[in-house]
Image 1: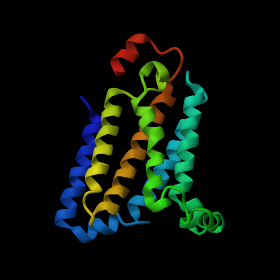
Image 2: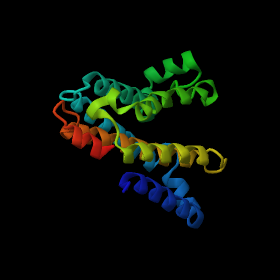
Image 3: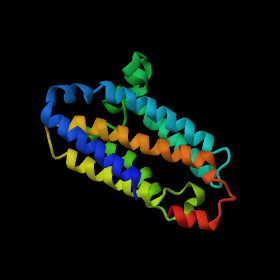
Image 4: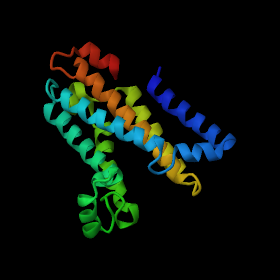
Length: 200
């Protein structure tokens, strides 16, 4: 079974249904700086903490801490370096340097793709490189499903922004779930070969 993959697809299907039946309500929920985006900030912050804690006992400590650092960068980018919550000093400096209050929306948004590369590398990396920090088969497929939904969402001009907000929330929730899992001990050096194979 692929519970996380199925959950992501189910939530996406519910969102599509909501968009068709209650477009105004759905648009408000998934609006820029709306409830879904603020929720994604909280989930992303929790993911940073989960991966940082996982780095204290993981068999690939550098990988866990690198993921925590990367997610922390994504978090400050998502909140426009504080501008979203009223701390505008750094955001204004970013705007002066990049033409936008964050880097991932600079260059007409094309730099957004650079932030996807570390995640693609993580989910595509062979298990032997990541040890107990490797994503399970379900987690890999969940990432593929979310990535595919990103592409599909970008094909709808009317709902592109809303789709991105929802899918970012799902992606951050997936990363939080992985961080919690490896932090509970599946990332320890003592993980048995049988357990690794079962999780593959």
